[in-house]
Image (cartoon, rainbow, N blue to C red; front, side):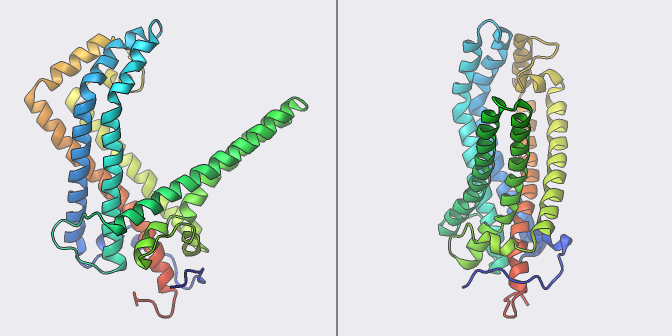
Length: 319
């Protein structure tokens, strides 16, 4: 199949772009099954990760009073927390790749997966490579622009300081714009990989050509909307369970009005209660399902982009 830009013939449908999760052959029932299965595995990764992090985290919080006098003792806690964070990070990444691949297969190939829709095989590996490639490409573009601008600006500061500073600022702004630009231009790569059953990365730009601003609008709306909703869910859940804002400050490196030992003691007391632990696990799964819905909706925009591109062909399989 030739992957080339196609003139935009049909209008952008925002509603369709953000609802691909519910347009599969299985309809809303299949979407709910995908959300729950993806959320369940995400929740399991979070719970296991937090279990590994809990003990060293409490030690980290207890020692935060010594951050100015003995920073080594405080920072050493990060190493002990690394396995838990790695489990959550890579477990979540692989889970979301499986969920995204299932969505692309359902919409673009019209596959109705029986049972749990999560799988791991060649399609998932290709989607993982494409998704990782998009973000690496966007980050490298940002880094190179900022690095070149920074070096050039630093050199000029010895001659014309104001011009050098201005160039550094401009380079950072250009790099900040380039990051989402390349991310959106290449965003259909994962869906195209499933559609064409072949690994793609840069070919994603052909799908988004003349469709950039429409896709950017959809990503912006879903990205910010989902972030706000999930942040609210997280804050409500944490406040209901712990009821102490000092814990949030501690997770960001500040103690607020309480000492590290007091906060650690509060956490130990709270989570020594089996009911609190059960509620925390339930809350983790609810939050994971919300995150799964958000990120699968984001992935669905890439699905829509490929479908939109295919529909602009006279021989489209989606007519």
